[in-house]
Image (cartoon, rainbow over all chains, first blue to last red; front, side, top):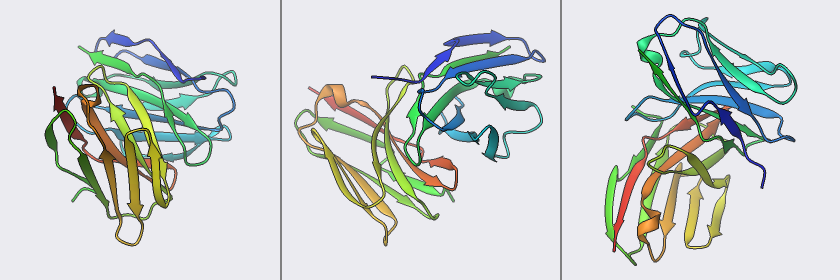
Length: 111
Length: 107
């Protein structure tokens, strides 16, 4: 059964560094999402992406964040200058219409 | 006030018990999802509902659009059902998540 994959599973970075989180969505899906979950808190929406552009973004998704689908298969989330409060689990999801399938997540630790 | 409220926050059950988790929401939705999150963190989609009722094995999910309420039922619960169950509603292009219900089922 096809699934969403994410790399790396765990990323440790220093404050101020740039990180790129990678996702490979399910191949025939058209909608792509990033969510984050700070430890002990609920999952929060970051951004949705459709037809090669951002369709909606949350207040969290400020100028430090960007998304890209560089080659038609990967879907990346870049954080330009990481802060301590960016430490969280980041989930990618893909789907068609209302359904969404989640990747296993990348745990980002900013020190 | 949270747009998606779940109850209870924590639930403990003996193996074999019938379990109900509730979700209420205050925003317009196009669909409601029930998700399962295990201690490792991964999220698995259990159901997507826009009306009525769905059943998969021992799991049943219902939604009442007029009352803005959904329930997830687990029949004949088993220790492997222990996880966090999350209700999430689709509002425009995003999902809005509840805080989750932590279920522990003891043998």
